[in-house]
Length: 96
Image (cartoon, rainbow, N blue to C red; front, side, top):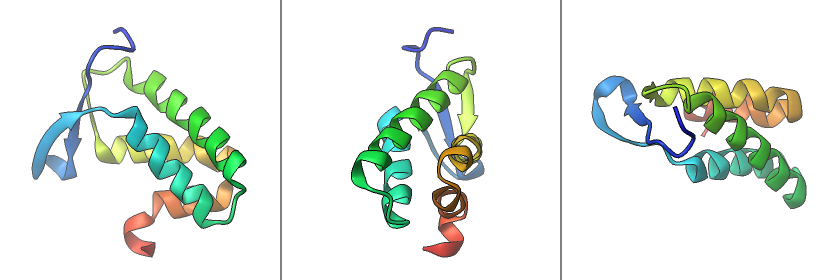
C-alpha cells in the first residue's frame, strides 16, 4: 500500500465515525506530550517528527486501524526517545 493511500481510523471501538488517518494529529499529540514533560521545543518537534513518520510507515501497510492501535504504536516508539512523554501519551485519558 502506498504511503499516500488513505487509511481509515476506527474511533473508540466503532462508537464514533471512522475518519481518515491524519499524520499531523499524531505529530501534534506527540509534540504536546513532550512539551508537557518540559522537553525543549526543538527536541519535542524532532521527536514528534520521528514518531509520526514511524506511525505513518506502520499504518501504510493497513487498510484500517483503530485509534487505540495508533496510540499504542506511537507510544512504543516514543518510549525509546522520551520515556516520560511516552507514559503521558499512552495514559492521556487517565492523566489529563
